[in-house]
Length: 204
Image (cartoon, rainbow, N blue to C red; front, side):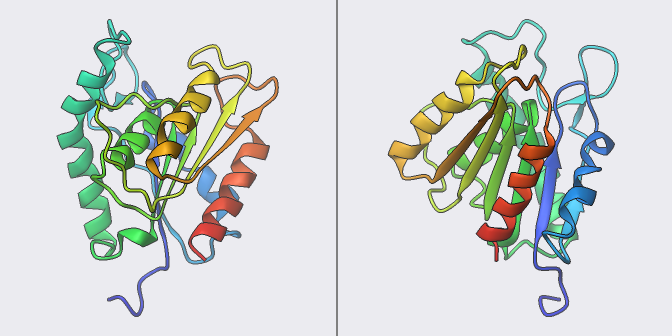
């Protein structure tokens, strides 16, 4: 299997109220930079508390105080989703060739996966997210992280990306941050392009 398997598995994690297909177009942007990569864009495990789409955890009544508890409760279902995709694609013994790419709540879960040390993957890319994991953190320090955020994000302030880097770097993690001027709660062409080159450089 390992001789014919693809060199890289990119798992894309959507935001709350969205679904896997919403992030799937990113694969088209990145396939030239990442030749032979396998892309997966699953739905989160639970239907969204607010009508359409799916969620990794509920944000109904979420506060700074209870968010980390919800992330902890979401871990078993998240881990089961990741394990299924990784095993199905033949990367179970090659986590260093797996990249987690998150948007918004997907970034929260991707950061939690490495900040907790559960998933020592090859790289993490997070758009418009935050680090909200339960303490203490015990990160997978060899996993480099790229965080991209719009300066005009009305949903999750860009300061959350700066805070995440400030929390993870002293623990030994490599974290690159990009704040895109004037951008809202979305992924810009510039951010997506940097993500593609970051993944290519990291897993070359």
